[in-house]
Length: 151
Image (tube, rainbow, N blue to C red; front, side):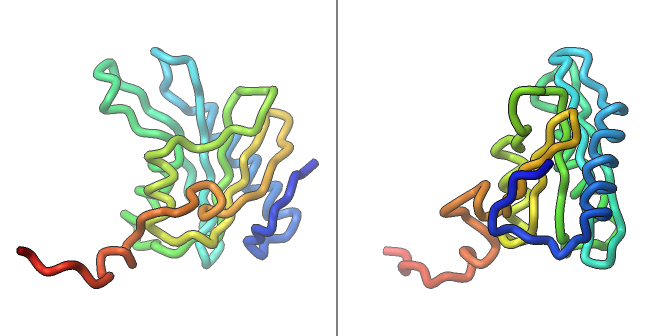
């Protein structure tokens, strides 16, 4: 069961199902003793490698790290910087789980045209692009735009 947008990672139905399943498996490893809000993510690189992540909370709340950023940081630390898709899983049954603003900005660092699968516990999903999740975004290309000279 899928809700789709114009987003397409070029993945087969089987690859999408595997990615969604892996995000839900990663959710099981979440460390969320304070919020009890478990999140898992599975990131599909251009060459088909999948990196998973879960949220890791901390008693000093601002030091927590979301599942999406964990998966992306794992991939980058292993030399990957080109992504096709990410699936995000949580325990909310009534709606598709979307990433927080910080995660959206980290995802944006690696482009706006890759696919995001927002999922529910029943493995249904909604398909979007990073650009749809973060319209009018600021990214690496903005740093090279002409600027006004200092006065």
